Amino acid sequence: MSKIPTVALSNGVLMPAAVFGVYQIRDPKECQKAVESALAAGYRAIDTAASYGNERAVGEAIKASGIDRRELFITTKLWVEDASEEGAKRAIARSLELLGLDYLDLFLIHQPVGDVYGAWRTMQGFYQEAVLRAIGVSNFAADRFVDFAHHNAVVPHVNQIEINPFCQQKEALPILKQFGTVPEAWAPFAEGRNNLFANPTLVSVARRVGRTVGQVVLRYIHQLGAVVIAKTVRPERMAENLGIFDFELDAEDMKQIAALDLNTSQFFSHRDPKIIEWMCTRHIEH
Ligand SMILES: NC(=O)c1ccc[n+]([C@@H]2O[C@H](COP(=O)([O-])OP(=O)(O)OC[C@H]3O[C@@H](n4cnc5c(N)ncnc54)[C@H](OP(=O)(O)O)[C@@H]3O)[C@@H](O)[C@H]2O)c1
Image (cartoon, rainbow, N blue to C red; front, side, top):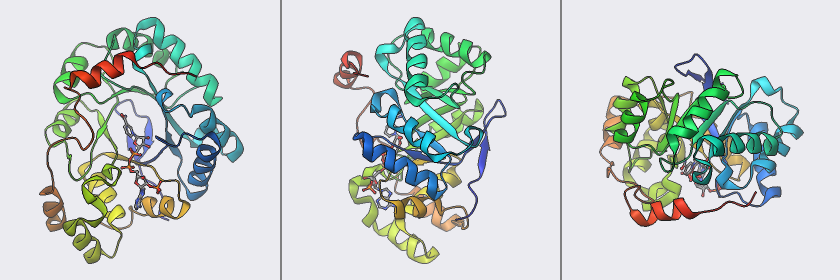
């Protein structure tokens, strides 16, 4: 495996360009095992969330790995019920405790819902005290993002959004760049939806470059300028998903994959009132 490059956030903090995600690895033993395998495979960045219910298991894996804390880049996220000035204080303390850490490398507002301005004020305070090395948002569409960036002292260092071949965020990426905010791609494989792994264009590019479809997809998103997060519970796929930094897609490959964009989420719309209702009322047991 080639070395994982880093991306400099606007505050100078270096973030690995490839992150291991643990969404939907709910069983604590399975989650701990997956994170231990990911660290053994070479990952140094882990993406979890209060909402995933597995911060404790991630913390156990970090401890068991024996890896120097300074080599790791740990991200977690604030769920909607804690999106307020006081709620964020509780959430940060709880996440640190569950993860067994005394600082976080990146803390994100998970959804653009609730009192996100209040939460951000608290996050800015913890950022000034270096309890959070970087702070950001997630699922902020371009219009919400521009408003938020204009009305806060600290512009989000990261916006974690869905980016995959069918949802390429062609409007959002240049806007994030303008604000110096690093895009981070969730569900880079669209969780396999729309038959991604058998897509004829992706299969043909993969054949041409002698790589797997998964590697082509992650490399494409990397070349778009986003940090990629991939989830797998299989060690051989962890190695595969890290093997994207020793080849390049040429302009023709990029053009062909760009044409796959359907310009829509493969999951749900943040404009759907039913989804927002679900977010507003969902309670997490810790
Ligand atoms: N901020 C947010 O709202 C948000 C939302 C969703 C996700 N995320 C983050 O983004 C991470 C990634 O997203 P995701 O887990 O939803 O989806 P994803 O990474 O697009 O897809 C994961 C699926 O792809 C399979 N897979 C992984 N590598 C593969 C490969 N090389 N070849 C074939 N199949 C492969 C995995 O199966 P196996 O495990 O069986 O290998 C799993 O079923 C999450 O874990 C989470 O950290 C954030």
